[in-house]
Length: 251
Image (cartoon, rainbow, N blue to C red; front, side, top):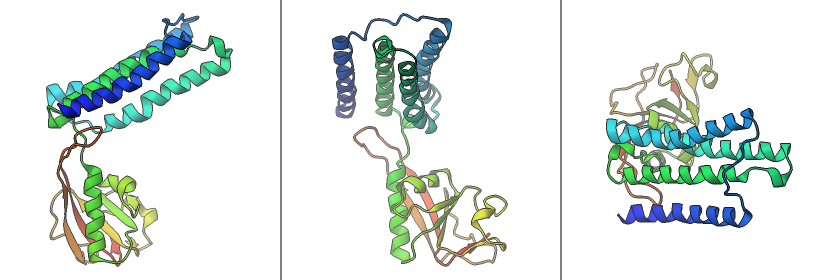
């Protein structure tokens, strides 16, 4: 309950600032759409403001499906789209005629629906994002405990391992095709080998895995992170199984 109240307070603060500025500047009158083109744009943004935040909540609560990517859609699609639309109309018309009130009426909808994501996180594990950052930190610690060579390449055989790009202190290159050489050849030499320190990351235990030369990993281990409450959400457990090849690998 404390977690829900904290997040509701964050949203209420942002919404309060928005409403205060909107009322003071006279932006909160419903927009007068001057032509069919502008009307269509506004309708599109209203649909997106409702659809993107609501979609993961509906599927998670009623079907038990976890849609991790929708968090990115909300963060990197909806809000920038609204801002770009505002900027576009600023350049076309005088500043006084620019419809800030369009943005001010859509953002409360967005904030309210995103609060519903937070609330759903408190009641069902399906709606929660994976504890990727915690798991990647454990991957880095496992690597550093077994070799002094800095990790240069991660071969992705597990979807959560993509988080190495964002959270690993090594920021390694990624080979997205998994432990095969057919795709991502530009990272390998003519023999299908990579000479730098490499990790292969699976979602399940792979104790008998070897590379194309039959070379076994110098070390391996499980990097598992429990779900926990953060400032903005509640995460759910994630595990990655790491095979370490500090002297390079051939696929």
